[in-house]
Amino acid sequence: MHNVYPKCEICGMTPYFGLYDGFRLGKKFICSRCERQILKTKAHDSQYQVFIQNIRRIIYC
Ligand SMILES: [Zn+2]
Image 1 (cartoon, rainbow, N blue to C red):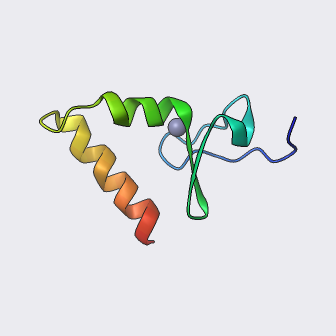
Image 2 (image 1 turned 180 degrees about the vertical axis):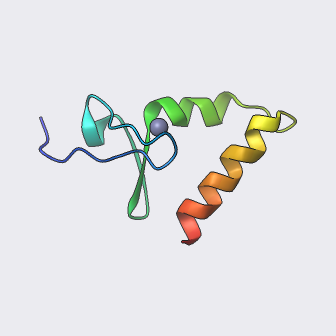
C-alpha cells in the first residue's frame, strides 16, 4: 500500500486505494469513481458541462 492518500479534486474524497484508485492530472488527482462518471456522462447531459468546467479549472489553475 502507498502512504500517499490524495484527495479527489472533483468530489473531495480520498479513494480507498489512494493513488492507485484514480489518475493524476498534472499535480491534481481524480478518483476512479469520478473518472467513470466523466466517461459515462454524455455531452448533451447537463452534468457533463459541470464536469468539463471542473476539469478545466483543475488543469489550468
Ligand atoms: Zn472523485
